[in-house]
Image (tube, rainbow, N blue to C red; front, side, top):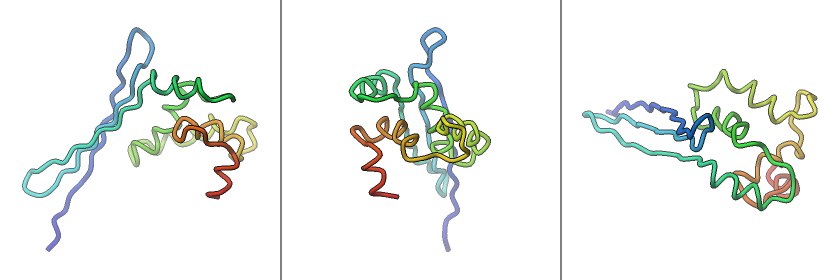
Length: 122
């Protein structure tokens, strides 16, 4: 017999004034017998901007970065956000995301990445 469990994700934005300073994603894995396993993902503006400052090419703003990663971090809860995330990455409005457009996003996740590194995986 297998125990059924479910996962719930909660999104929290921490702000200073009108500016988002951190996006936090809390994952509650509800296991059998009332046990909950919790994991957290923090995306801090300060860290994002430090990484972005080391990149010698255009990057997304922190707000746009959060919009792009949200569908991945929120899973099914954020399916409606995928079109906006796609639109933010598709800067030439070609209805496809080319390797150069993706390369603008990737350094925030993988520092020092570029289109050549991405080509290795696609």
